[in-house]
Amino acid sequence: MSSKILIVAEHDGAKLNPSTAKCVTCARAIDGADITLVVCAVNAAAVAAEAAQLAGVSRVLTLENSANEHALAAVLAPQIAALAEPYSHVFGPSTTFGKDLMARISGLLDAPQVSDIMAVESPTRFRRPIYAGNAILTVEVATGSKVIGTVRTASFAAAAAGGPAPIEKAAVNVELPKHTRFVSISAARSDRPDLQSAARVISGGRALGSAEGFKILYALADKLGAAVGASRAAVDAGYAPNEMQVGQTGKIIAPELYVAIGISGAIQHLTGIKDARTIVAINKDAEAPIFEVADIGLVGDLFQIVPEIERLL
Amino acid sequence: MKRILVGIKRVVDYNVRIRVKPDGSGVVTDGVKMSINPFDEIALEEALRIKERGGAEEVVVVTVGPADCQQQLRTALAMGADRALHVQADGGIEPLVTARVMLKLVEREQPLLVILGKQAIDDDNGQTGQLLAALWNRPQATYASKVELHDGAARVTREVDAGLETLDVDLPAVITTDLRLNEPRYVKLPDIMKAKKKPLDTLTLSALGVEPRVQLKAVSWSPPAQRQKGVLVKDAAELVAALKQKGLL
Ligand SMILES: Cc1cc2nc3c(=O)[nH]c(=O)nc-3n(C[C@H](O)[C@H](O)[C@H](O)COP(=O)(O)OP(=O)(O)OC[C@H]3O[C@@H](n4cnc5c(N)ncnc54)[C@H](O)[C@@H]3O)c2cc1C
Image (cartoon, rainbow over all chains, first blue to last red; front, side, top):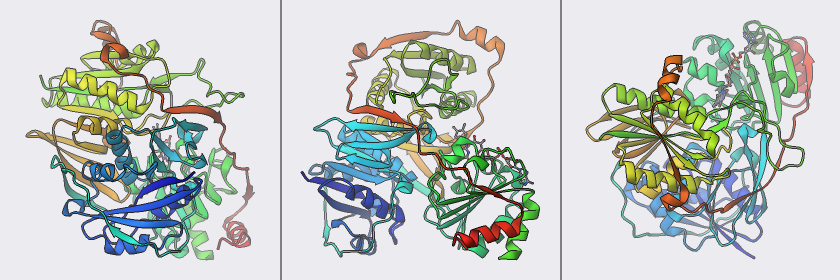
């Protein structure tokens, strides 16, 4: 049996987001997967060319429209829904882009969505985390209905380079709403690696005490070529911007190395780092729950330890 | 009347340590503390603040679920909601069904705004707001950390992976809340007494004409893979050495 899978590519207009290559790996785990990627953009050429290089992709469709300049779910969803008819599955990443968009597509198609797919058991059976990752649910989608899915990117490796797959222009005839308008985006520009795809991540918690306190983490991160993350407590307190939050309601990441500094290890935080290869914890409280999951723990004062590590590198 | 509809869900309190039943038929919920989903509490708080600023005249809370959900509706009334709607349904309601119920209530109540949590911390589906917006054919502004209403539109700041995005959406619209939108108020004892007198209406799925379809069948539950507890090192030098040994530096 073959499954026709449509994957909505995430990108910033110029480059493909690494989450898309992970969706491809998830889709390839489905028997007989025939994978189509769709790029919605004003000018899709550069992103489509990149997408066409992913191993396992049969073709790349482009939907070009001046309304696609910003990824507004209300504008993109009707276009994808109009394209979705021949497909058995429509997937996107479990990033804020994908979570916002895919459920709207699910509503338009009246097809159920499986959120945060972490494993594929059959074309209709998937495993996904619930209760902040404290339980894993196996869920079966009723036969005969399309499967909408968001892919938990930390559970899948990126698809390798392959291809190139053919790129085709697609067109849909739908009226796009004007009720939703982009105003602005404020994203901190940083030369550090992207938190979601970095091999090394250094995260700080409430213990850092201030935005100033976080500077010792940035210094260490820069020496290691690492991205910097934060606990919710640190973000709530204004020590770090929201895009740095790691956890159930922040980013779910799977770096090679995760260093938790002055983070207690609340369950909502741990769910974001469970798939890290190696977890290091630095905390002055030997009883902190973070030590239950850390591969390497160091009990002590971070303000003394962190600069010391930096000197030793 | 300028009305805000707020959806709330009864969930296992976020402080409870979740355990999967040994036979894999669910998680243990007997005798555990139940609360309003934290994101929904934030949704209600935002609605109350909008009303207090004069942006709305009535805040209506809605839940879909079994009879004991009325406890959480009472709490919501004590927080300050004006009335409550309980749509009876036995557990396992899918997001698409909940969204259809919400759509029916939207048609009856004609709200200017529907505010929901971005996800419920039990199923972690994160779908209902977007589904409702799609079915209703209205704007959605998910993951809100700031909401301002003016002239038939809302300006919403959203927490997205790249940072903070601001959208203008025409009303009526659906907003889903993120954690930093506000800090919900505490309920005071006299408010709990007053809440007992506020209207709480009960409805059924069949009266609303919504079929409790099952398109997502829960097959089994299992505990997550556990990480092994590792080793402790005594100082920074040992830590760096251990990382080098693992080939991580
Ligand atoms: C619905 C919901 C969703 C949530 N989502 C998330 C999420 O996505 N991500 C998240 O992180 N949290 C989330 N939380 C919050 C979570 O429950 C915790 O409150 C939060 O993770 C705690 O952050 P923290 O570890 O920085 O702070 P704390 O728990 O206060 O821990 C600080 C730690 O620093 C240590 N410390 C203090 N001083 C020093 C020092 N000088 N040197 C070394 N160590 C020191 C202390 O021993 C302590 O262990 C969520 C909560 C809820 C209710």
